Length: 249
Image 1: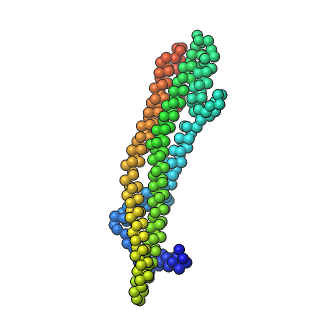
Image 2 (image 1 turned 135 degrees about the vertical axis):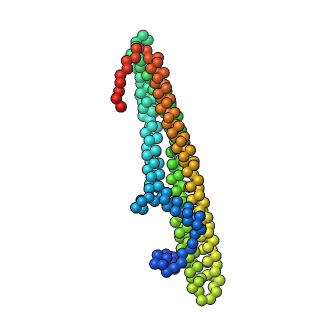
Image 3 (image 1 turned 60 degrees about the vertical axis):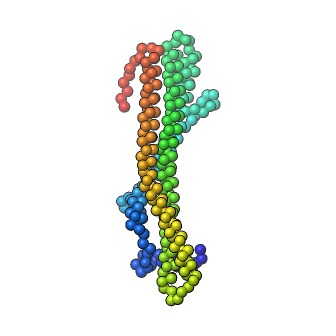
């Protein structure tokens, strides 16, 4: 872009701010969606609550998944989840005792249970990632693409309004001005349609976000239910009389 065009666009922008230049109008439907996007993107006092909130959700979910899927190197140099490592250590040490050792049998029972919990945790991590984490990443990418498209639209609108203002001020017909106006109008309309489509996509994606969040709820409930289930099964077949100790939470 040459310096003269940049200067013309700056004059157009400054003129609009001062109220001296006309600004291209948008349709009521476009304005309505734009207001909705602003409410999503901006909160009170101009704080970008929606975008910042979604970014924090994505970061916290990423940290959560990372903590659940982090693997440590065990004695056999193989990496496994901490609960799986705990289980295998209990199991192997339990096998060091005589077959009639109650302590050894308890360690084996607890070890096998924790190994099962490790496998349940791996399934949960996969389900939580495919449902909520990936959904957050899609939503964040969608909003960033919309913001980029909106900036491009504003640049093209300024270019179009600048060409229109020059055309209106011209004292005689100028083919080059007419051609420039036609090109700038086409670019503006193309960007306007792109932004409108993106706003509609963001609005309609809420249904998918709710479904993805619901799937995450089901995955988390299933995870804790399955963990409790295998622990209760272990308790029922505990090698010795079970001594119940109350832990206050």
